[in-house]
Length: 376
Image (cartoon, rainbow, N blue to C red):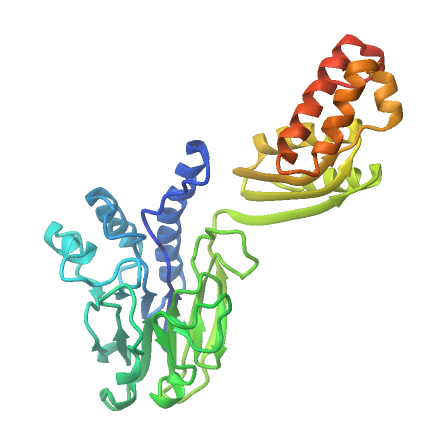
């Protein structure tokens, strides 16, 4: 029974500019580690080939060292690797692929399909119909030629392409690099391996997106997997098994705060996060001074514990209670400032007003330790 490992969207060389360097570098390195895990997985599962459906590199301008490192990462699997270019690394006349060839970096077991072609692996029982992108965007369906393509009798017909299945994917991406939704049936494919969508998704019984093996965004779309594909014979039903291969788990935690028990619940959720988590924290609602300080302390501890923390507090208001203000002894002018900062949290500079209010409260708390409040 022929077996394949289907993967895509490695985007080697990606920069994570939205993160601090201490986090961006490990996230970029994780993409190389993901390829090494895929190679080990392919060997462990004794697959007949690894199919890489585009966007191997994040850009044409990656360094020579990055090119060499990528192909070195494939060494853990000695069988055939079939790679096609995607929109990030299209097979232009001068591209990262031509540079890789000039560097002599491409191993003999790596098959680069830089033009539409049929690759025959008769000894392994299959043929690959490859539809690489030769430019970043096209409005033609580059898989259309599959329908009339001839392959040796008795071999599995495996398609590989990079683009958007029309009428399926959301977010208005149905135009660049279109692929007909029924291409597998029309072209008599036993399996169609797709790239471009960064999450694992089934199109039909014979057509799948594998998603990226290492997540790179905060979307609950089953990223961080590769697909083990098993086919008994031409025309048989494909058995597809998602295999987890990610290093980091990208998660969005969102919560609305209003009362003390909401803060308790938030802190319990944050305590579950660990070193393999990349967290996007979104907080809304309002807290008093004590609640705000508890949240700030928990965020500081979380930042030290997880791989990366991005916090969006733009929807959170700091609302000192009358007891808070009385305990701070913020009468007269200071009381007026606190009132103004409370109100300013509904304007354009809400975050600045919240931070200023927290800082002022901390300074006042230092003057009056009996309040039990501390600087955040």
